[in-house]
Length: 493
Image (cartoon, rainbow, N blue to C red; front, top):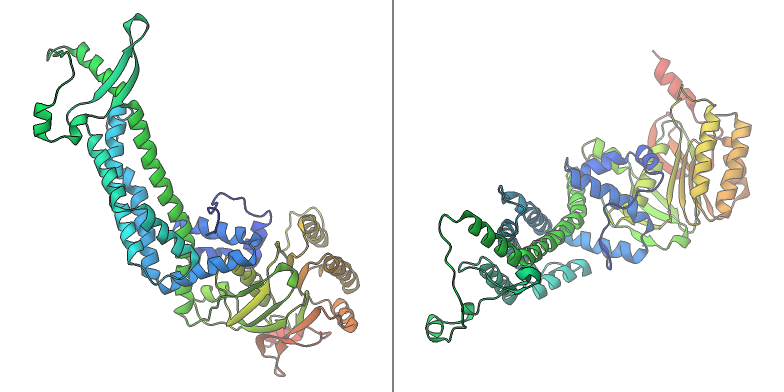
């Protein structure tokens, strides 16, 4: 996921994550990526929100990896399945009733590591066989696996696991401490493991004394068992840590691959309906502009089972303000959501729903959409809107992007226009990028008359017969929103 660090699944979401989810209908996107898998859902959500701080190089790095995934989906899913198998390995081996004793810990760790070695060998085989990956991320992963998981490495692991089963007993050294109690227990490697049977037969043996325990000496058996546990205690802990270390690698591999599995799931749902996708061209955050062709609301397409929905074009390079006006139910809010979705998806390394898209990154993304009337509110709707706007202002940074949808329309035209003018002017001065859907004609027309170079005006297209095309065209704002069309549609009969 990153060049120089691991993906942090526990990273805190932005303070306005619930507003983004509600206004951009992100639950549709997350569910499409997750396909009812809880981990995929959590990773998709964390990746989409954590992408806002990414720079252009990080975006392109992740895009290259995703392109590899789209070219080799079966291999990526195979890697993901291997990580799941490895993580589930300890569950297949029971602890038993003496599970917390060193001998039991050692035995279980040997069994777990033995199974993990099998998965590691399969992982290396995948790394050796793959030549169709061009991204730096996958090349580094496969090179690391080929470099670290050698035949000698596996041979050493298997030799150690065989020795640690202590088929011929445990060799432990100790000293005498106060009161002739044993101290400084050390587990020793038996020299017999490296000798032939002839060498062992004729080798000079060190002086030793033997003590044979009576079969019915329960206390003696208990004492010997305690001595054995003391001897293998450190080995048992070291082996348990080794298995945990390998498991932690597979857990991180699973989490990072989960994002790309979610991307594959999303891509399959979109492309099966014929909807276009493209990899966007990210620009530095101070460029302030967007240009795209056929941009559509991916969540709307998903809600219609991947069917093609109307897309829009825009050329707004070096334009920091986009004002959208026009007919009611002309697709303005849908267009605004498509811009927000494309921004989030671009900055987390995803493809976007468009034929072509380029745009500047933003430090933060904010939405200010109208809310349904709440009977429990202690103040008016305008106060509620201004309160949410105040929260946004407290978190604003230069080069942020804010999407406003019918904001400040809860009062009359004159007051709403003045509020909008002051807020938009202040945001623009602070280098904040703005997309504003509005019916405030006084505000929009005065801004249009100033002919500011950084401002683009779009209007929801309406044909002469009242038909909505759901396309945004570059036109001056009109005084009417054609509310009579809706009246006629509702009350004509």
